[in-house]
Amino acid sequence: MVRSGSGDIVHEGRKLAAGPAPAGDGVSMGESGPVAGDLPGIWGERLKEAELLRDLAPESRSALLAAGTRRRSARRTLLFSAGDAAETLFLLVSGRVKLVRGNADGQEVIVRFFAPGELLGGVAALPDRRYPATAEVVDDAELATWSRAALVPLMSRDPHLATAILGVVATRMGDVQGQLQELATERVAQRVARALLRLARQLGRKAEAGILIDLPLSRQNLAELTGTTLFTVSRLLSAWEAEGLLEVGRERVVIRSPHGLVRIAEDLP
Image (cartoon, rainbow, N blue to C red; front, side, top):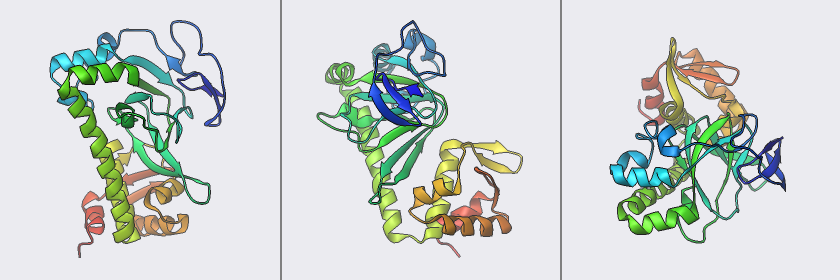
């Protein structure tokens, strides 16, 4: 059981009841909540190249960091749930977060993974919005957060900041439209290859055999990301491993031939 950043009690990744936030100046990574310390001083250099911040002028970046809060969230904490009022903007500093939505059968489907340096909950910058999906921490995470109450005055005073935030929101919407187009127009093999390449760009790191997707990734996770079945994903991964494109283990994927996956994703001969 862990507490979400809002103080809600969370068990097995599900919000159960509201409660007071932990007392004290900070929290251990076994809990979740605000962490004492000046955001610009602690993470200022670390965040200079993060999404949104890297495109801001130094004075805009400093003002934004000064208005933010440091937060730690333990694995399986819900940062927000689908349908909640969008009141907080998050920037992932370390750890991993997944975005999930319920399907017509009431099951959770993974929409996207977030890597360090990425912004989530961008709709909090817009008036009267609700989060369209649920964000759950995959690994213990550190985040910079901004309340909507802190963001709105900053955006009013700084048009460049407002443009940058809205640009990130537009990019996320474009990503969703792209995924919907893939589901409607591409063969399953193309979608799975494209999803693996996307994860490699986000979360990949060099390994001896190729590019390791640095995330516990089950075949079921990959099926959810690509709108197909566990059987189909298992068949494709086994075939691609036999061809030398991948090295597949339990919740582990190494891309041995990125060019081979590109060929499949682009439906090239």
